[in-house]
Image (cartoon, rainbow, N blue to C red; front, top):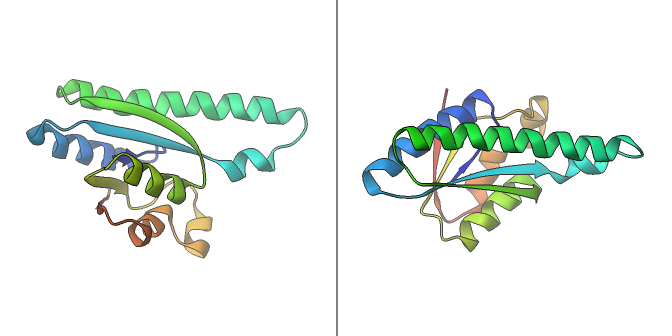
Length: 136
């Protein structure tokens, strides 16, 4: 499984995940988590527009990742879920019996990661699945 947010780090994870899947004829699950906190922070008339924008961004990110898999004939699935990213990633990996999670070293959330700990760090601490950290 490769959680991706379109950042440089997650792009490196997409490439590493695809290259690891190829020799094993494995299917890569590309997962994009729409952070529930982002949607909940919007209110009034902007909320529907924000939801539409986040859904469109998720589709574009996942399509880009899937093209990388298609280029080398690796099977891929695209999944968009909402929630707290590290919690959704952990739950998805358990529910789908994921063998390996490939994540970028850091994502888009910037300063928040330095104050609270990155999603990657939180996933590493909360799953039994092996996690490979890819750097751009």
